[in-house]
Image (cartoon, rainbow, N blue to C red; front, side, top):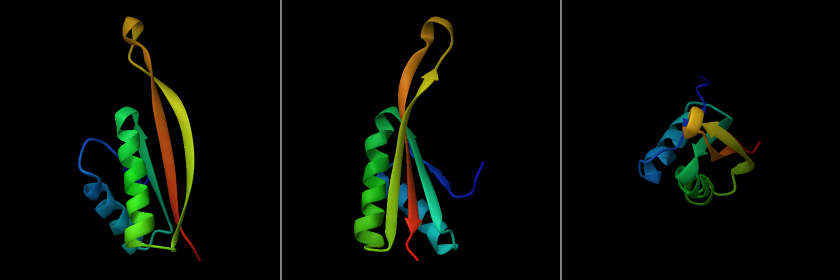
Amino acid sequence: MSENVVYVGNKSPMHYVLAVMIQFNRGSDKVVLKARGRAISRAVDVAEIVKNQFLPGQVESSVTIGTEEVGEGDQKRNVSTIEIVLTKKE
């Protein structure tokens, strides 16, 4: 598991903003936010808070979306995923 990946779940967005800021302050040039299902909107909020409030004009983002199959047998279902890559500008 890569150090600069932040998995977004059910905590408040500020928990994840803090995790992203810690990664940037440790010298990372790139931090990846990953989320599935209902946490996708929270991941987008985290990215926007970092970009607009904590590091305005210093961060670029790229987004990848997809679908994962979760569960087994009759319990199989598709879950949406998002990966937001935050990169510090040079």
